Amino acid sequence: MAVNLEHIQFQGIIFDASNTLISEYPIHIQFYNVNLKSWLSLTEKSIVLKKSKFLYELEIPDRISTSNQTMRIVREVLKSGGIPSFRIVKESKEDIIEVIARSYTTTIQQEKEIVNINFGEHWLLNKEAFIQKEDHVIIASSVPVFEMSSTLESLKEEREKFNQDKAKLSKEIEGLNTAITTLSKEKEIIENNVATKDTAINELNERVVLLQAKLNEEISAKEELTTATISLRAQINEQQKMIADYEKEASENYKERFFALEKQVIKVEKEKNDLVKEKQAFLESVKKLQLDTEKYKDIIKEKDAELSTNQVLVSSLEQKTEKLREELEEARSYNQTEHPNKLAASKVYGSIVNDVIKADEELANSRFKLANVSLNLKTTVEKGPEGTLLGLLDFESAKGINGAAVSDISIDIVPNNAAVVTNGLKMPNILGLTETAVRKVLLDYGLKLDAVYHATDNQNLVEGQSFKQSPAPEATIEEGQEVIVIFAKSIK
Image 1 (cartoon, helix red, strand yellow):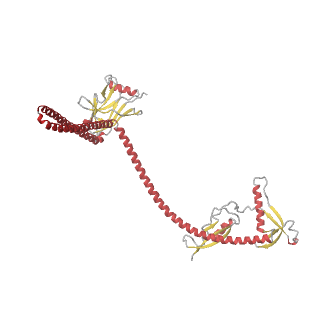
Image 2 (cartoon, helix red, strand yellow):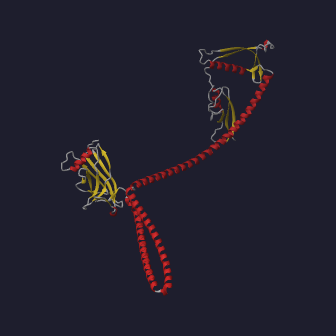
Image 3 (spheres, helix red, strand yellow):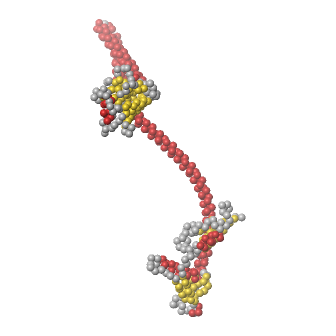
């Protein structure tokens, strides 16, 4: 893709071998001319580092003289969408070119018509670490090789120690070879003397045996030394190979290993921070748990007090239940034995009203509605344990009753628009009210009050204030239902 650029901006950072900022260090930027197959300088004057940094901007004119082929080729490459090859070299009077950096990253700011060439960070090498090429020498690295100096020095010391051990073993082997040669010569002399001196044969034979044994020992020692030498040579070769591999790995893969270690350090730091956060969260949870424990202790105290109050309420309800059970048994005994057809007047009326309500609900979606209901009942009237009793008459039961004892009772049922409908309503909250206020609220709901005064030393309660109720607030209620309310009374 063709682009129109008017400036090239070069930048980078160069440290010395000990990772120290440097200044007054002259450099040049070169461009590779593919036509001439050679590197040409883009900078007429040297660029001087200031605190290890440099920033150089080169203008790309629209009109370039024919003599300036370098800038013309650079402009053509950029216009075609490509990036030329650049490098940084040290300004030197030596014949051989000293290259500092060839790798860089490129960004293009089309709105400003600038291409940015960033060589990044480079570290100068010590002279003995220069990398020799065919026509130039590399004097810097893109990785901080100063961190490897101690390791390389240690490896050099080990290599020197191996070389010293190798030289020492070589000298010992040479001495053994000389001794073997000397012994061989002595053996030859002895054998010549044996041929001429028969009287010394026995002595010479003994000496030969001794010399032979000594020779065998020397030969064994030589073999052991030879084996040791071979082993040492193998170890030396292995160490040299390890050193060569390490130097190769250090020169080629150090940057990759450096980034891997850097990622590992970041990961360990993240794990450390996560552990610190987990520890803080754990301490917070422990603190919260302690606060919740104190809170639950207070709640337990309140529940104990509430349980004591509920026990009083239960005792009252049990007494009232027992009383109602006795009254019910009395009424059942009265009705079942002597008056099987007699019902309390309130139950008769309530049964009729409930039937009317049920019929009205069943006709909710009908075109017809119940109006006023009038009933004329023939019944006997007398006093019973539940109040007024109505003896409902049928054909058989009316035969044995004097007609003067039969009364006509008319019941008119009309809608009460001002009544409070309690079917499906919830029990109101009457806690904290006085008995007078409680009665007024319950009267509006058509409920009855059973007041119970209980002595308490709770300083938060005022004498005469309600603090317990049954049914509880929001419970389902029915018209005429009795509500038990406990009011506070001074313990004195």
